[in-house]
Image 1 (cartoon, one colour):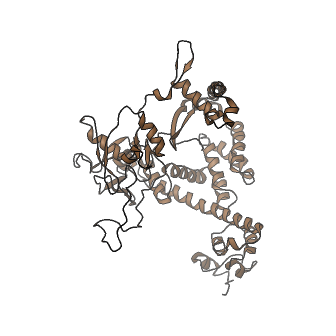
Image 2 (cartoon, one colour):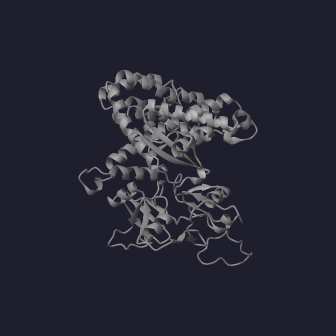
Image 3 (tube, helix red, strand yellow):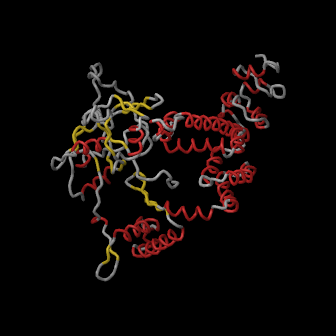
Length: 503
């Protein structure tokens, strides 16, 4: 191999990736191209370059004997990751700006939401994550060019930029933002993202004249929300003024300590009584404070078995009878079969669901009496989570794939969407094609991305008996061992707001 060292042609070689590296007049190109880990420290002395990826791909990390060289590898990879992140964020912001330039057109309604969905599909991200990245790209271009340049140079990470944008999202004065960036940039190069957050808190409180007014306005954002966690558990969160939260937690703590003493305290916990753990006692004390009642002696009494609420537990008949431990769902979240049987045992009434024996999608939704809303009941049971691929919110509204009255109100043309996705579709930013009675179809975005919506089984598809060797496969059936298509998505639906607590 011959290294090209002609400065007149250097840009041409670099543009088409023909193997030229600007530092070959200083460093050994053979070592650089053959993946010699000794070349890694030399890259760290130079500006980050996309061609650094060539060396990373050539290096066999398992063959590196020196841990220090692996640290060099990680340093180069992290710089390159930051550089690529700067390119991605710039592209996401540019797309969002160009996706709907005419603010007076019919497409302007919910244009931001539609752009977030487009970016989410293209980057295999959630809509919430795509929204954050678009905002980040805009801010780095328009408000924080210094941080944007540092990210492109690999001097800090995308997480640092996310902290900066998030912490300053309520500040509108350009001069204050510029002052904060100038004061934070040099420190950011030596701090972790968590340390930068604390540093920014101090800067903002000192430099932002509106911090006090904004703190008063923030009280209006107080809220309570829930989030499924799996294993039959869920998270309950509250956002409120700090003194109120402190007072509430003190009350929970005091009630929890009293309950723990009743349960035997540390000795009971050591003996194997998990209910005596401090955390469990605090959680049970909170439930008692909210749901409990006072008896004649004034004591707080709480019986969880008497709590009246509507939950949806789904399992097959064999699992309900205890014949097998198949998949069970509690409000759409998988739970162990024994837990599902415990919940079902105290139910006031059950409802029949008839599912397809092949793939498990809903065929019939039983009711105790016929209601005019039977179609809506069926659709929202067939589609408990928003039908748009990638959305994990609960389906709240009935949508006609082909708008009524052109489209019929039947199981083929109707499906469940969350309110936001329904509005995006109604505004013309997406269409739904090939809608079928089993809930399948094709989601088509305004910018021609097509995402298949497979039929969603209420439970898992029943196990198929193995076909005898040489036996023909039934028409339409997949050959044994073929993987089924899986719809994009993250977690079961949630009523939690976009800003969720860290888990």
